[in-house]
Length: 357
Image 1 (cartoon, rainbow, N blue to C red):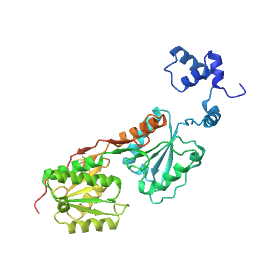
Image 2 (image 1 turned 90 degrees about the horizontal axis):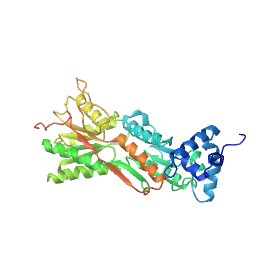
Image 3 (image 1 turned 30 degrees about the horizontal axis):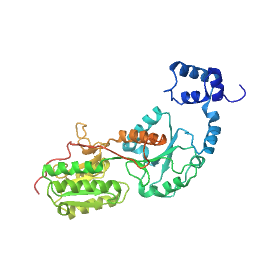
Image 4 (image 1 turned 180 degrees about the vertical axis):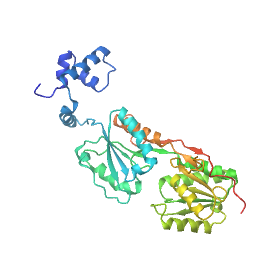
């Protein structure tokens, strides 16, 4: 044929309506018999039907009716160090598993955490992107999200945040408050009282949730957190920087009664353990240490992971976020839905009863 094959061409060959062909080729075969659906699939293949050839015209037609055509393309805004950490890779794998099964493509769009100025790709302005996933720090992504919403051809399309909730979006998060509660409850049960929370930003939503979990554990133990819970913050960046070393050393000197350290994540917990070892201090004999995420390993001489940590369901975060954004595209859920996934405490070898000081 000299012109692209249309739905009507297939309908004429199969002696059915164009609506029936359209529904069948989109996988909506509930009202179509198996024989008719099979016949439509065969004829479409024989004629060389290419849905992309008519997609632009169909999209323009739907726009005139105030409707949108799905492009089956979802964008993800991700940090520049995405592939450097298993933390992010596990989330990405979960996303891809669901999007691939549902026949959606994934457009990668970097998000620079150190700058709010982001240049959106032309695909957003053209209306080629159906929805967006956000794996970025809310503090730095706010302006980008505003720019995204201002695009006439994107506007109020679904946006789902992962791990860190973004105002004005749906989100899939982990129950960090309960994870922090479990970590402190474990340490208090071992006999620890004075704990150091060594983190990068206590004002962020994730760490505020963890802090609330710490307070809950102290309250249940009838202990005053103002007396026993100590906090030291450092700027985001390389754990190995001299400033971080100075801050941790100063905190331990300022609070000599501390017997356990709560790290921001597993990478931070491993850095703390190495920092202590360089000063002749042992984990857990001198200090107990707890990580958060269960992605990095602290190995002993037998090549066993000994890091006690809060395990986050990162793979399932990716899968659930993909399912949520697809449900939103089909109008099956609200735009502000928040899904919180359960966590678990993995008790290993970096926590033990405190030694007498």
